[in-house]
Amino acid sequence: MDLACSYKEKDLLDLSFCIPEEIQLILAGKNLTTVGKVLKTSKVDLISYGLTEEEADMVKSSVSVNVPCTTFMTVLEYSSILATKWRHITFRCPALDRITCNGLPLRGITEIVGESGCGKSQICLQLALNVQLSLADGGLGKSAVYICTEDVFPSKRLVQIAEFYKKEYRYDKWLDNIFIEHCPDSDNLMNCICNRLPILMNKHSIGLVIIDSIAGAFRIDGDAIIRADNMRKLVFKLQELADEHECGIVCVNQVTASMNETIRNRCVPSLGLAWSNLVTTQLKIRKTYKQVSKLEDSTILSTPIKVRSIEIGFSPELPNSFAEFIITEQGICDVPRN
Image 1 (cartoon, rainbow, N blue to C red):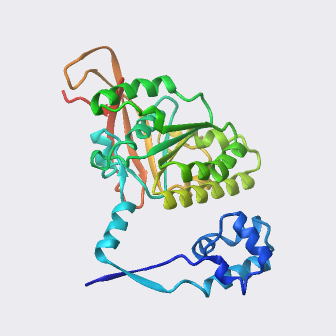
Image 2: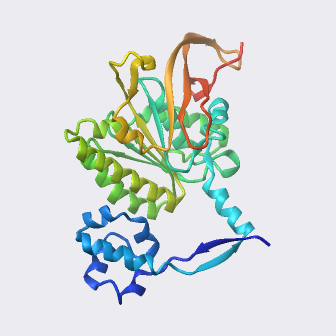
Image 3: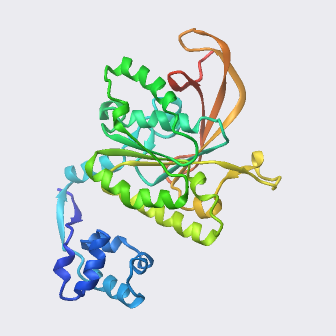
């Protein structure tokens, strides 16, 4: 039988003979209580926690030589772990699920970028409901966290979409499973993600974290170097929480005009390469000139609905492709066929 290797976490207290107590207290204060957690923490972060460069090197060296011994697991156990890692959250829109290979991935950071009014928040609201669906229906059976940085949370629109979910799934507590926070600047956002969010996720089963939008919190920061460093720390914390709690991470981003005429549409994502290099998957949304005046159920619309397009900007696992969708009272839907 094929076997796959794994290892058990080793408590940092087991290394007290080579790591001084005062340093262990500092690490414990940052919840770095096991060998695995220290291994995942960069030297820069250890120094930011109050350690000197020499102490950080000593901790890294002491932990590295005490990596736990391997144990074994069966292929069935390993397959179960992979199945969890490669899960998706459905968009409940066949066109979007098709180009993303079954929905929003639980790996890394997914950026949804586009101009104002193109439907970014609409997709996020629907994802906050979809994550509550059962595994069989494409969800995770978990709650969502929705962090606003700019506008007031669109509660009326969420209630409108939730009414259709209540009728279809005969479940009334959709709104009870969405936790909302407002963070108007980067300091508030950093405090929320690094301090308050981990506490919430330890108390509740969270399957999705949405930041709408990342640009609203960081683009007003003046010092580009400090801003880039804070964005990196924020993403590392989000990825740590995603791995620990098996949840998806979505960051909405705005676009900014570019003076470079060679760039298509002359609009590029905000925050530059410092942010783009931290993103795993990018979904670009654009408005189109197309309109529809009739829905799939042959309902004639009094006002035509504009068609939006969504494109895979980049992804380590998805080919570049695009789809079209519309936004109705029920949420995002496929474009009706003629």
